[in-house]
Length: 592
Image 1 (cartoon, one colour):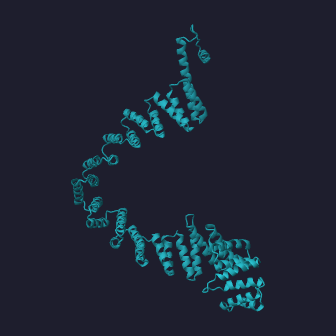
Image 2 (cartoon, rainbow, N blue to C red):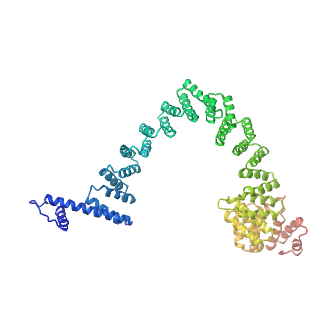
Image 3 (cartoon, rainbow, N blue to C red):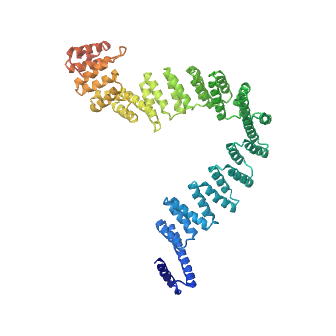
């Protein structure tokens, strides 16, 4: 049935171009008709393929895809149609079908570089690195000017852990492009993986021989020679490596690489004194980078700790380094960190931090640590001085405004404190420490309230709680000040209750909560909490406010004698308080 339909279709196609089909005796087509049909089919393929490309250009991908599938039905040997179909299957996440199509295209036209490179990439995506390497080898075999193909081959062989072939590729690269540091290091890396240490040594020797005036290559060769000597326990090789180091240092006494290698050799040989002397030379060498110095010092610290932690030599070394004409700030910072590690007193560390600020005035870490020391020593004037200088060098660091404001606050200078806090608001950002920002706004709110700026104070408290909604100090003060004004008592009660839950034995928080309940006329509940507050007061503290509140609560609960007792005890601390005097005289609650 299918054959009959195909013959009919062929007849229609032939008729459309004026070819009359003459069936043979067995019902088939004669050779002339078959040739005409082939010509017709090829012509229709060109039409459909061209139309597919037009639709592709217009972005009509569905139409282009259907046309391309029809193209491969018309001509199963059409490599370009398979190539474009592979792209569409890839876009549809049909990886197997995409790979099948690109493999077909490459098989049909193996000389087409684009098809072959696409096939190689397809194999790589499938992690079939062996097949990818075969394709790339064929590509390189046809075009040996393309060194990028060799680089790809190297990666593919490394993926397969086929190190012999990887080295072969590196040799081909070397033959094409000449010996280079990069290629030599790559070969050495492979040889070391294979534990072929002699080959690694030989590769570096060739590089050193190629560039005899490059002392860095000479030193690398000596390093590898020493590595092989240690593995083979070969004293002659060791001496050969040492001879190279000494030769380098005779030409260039300040060669840090050779000095460092020699220092490592001496330490491995157990000659600690000679190694330490050389290490000090390296640290004082003007060619030694900060990173190298830091690494050496960290190693020295580690050795010292492993040997018992005697800090004398380490501290002497740091002092010597800081005494140099242009001391390194990173080394000074490491010095301070080491002193802190050894739990040395602040008086010993502070001069080092001051030295850091002399070298680098904008060193924020050193300044903050000095502020911390001054704060712990209650040296508020020094805190203010350090933070004031930070306005010039670290103007965007909020912590300095906070500590300066707090120092002014404790110095009973609320105006200066408030100024510091207001200046600091502008530098708060998303990266700021939430806990510090929260405390910042809490103290700012207290200062604003002291100045009678209730609305601004409450705004500051709101900001505080946005950064940290469980800031207990803020919750207590905010709730109490609201209750004093008789405002938002329900919210005040909720905030105050959080503080009592957090610290159930804090007399101040219990008093605040009792007072808010009192303002809500919940006198019986207020009595429970004020009595808890009285039980947790400290004898050394001024408890007159708590005592007065207790009297107010007792009187509203009908406990006159207890109320009078509380008011009278409060009066001992505040003998001139007229409101207390009136309460006692009239035996009733009186608002201020």
